[in-house]
Length: 119
Image (cartoon, rainbow, N blue to C red):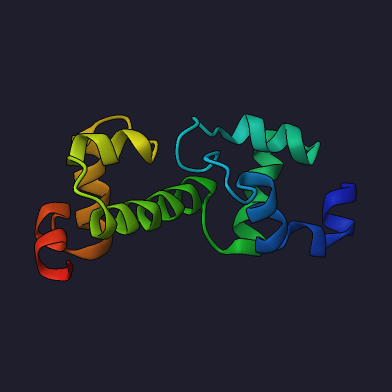
């Protein structure tokens, strides 16, 4: 059993949120985040990190990062007139297609439609 699991409060969402994105940081949204990088921070293997993440946060690391990115896109859609391509890039999506797919999956509406109906 790793030190991380022995000290499970350290692996709670607050700890992950602090590690992934400090105030004013674009870590979660712009940089490529990998399980390998996160596992290195936690000082455990990649598979064990993914296991602990799922155990304590009830979602995969990818799902968590995607959710954080989508929250950032939601804000940008409502507060800027930036193009969808710019927003996708600013929030760490590989391209507009990936951004549209993730957004539609979560919100059941396209980013463009979301902007029109919520602005």
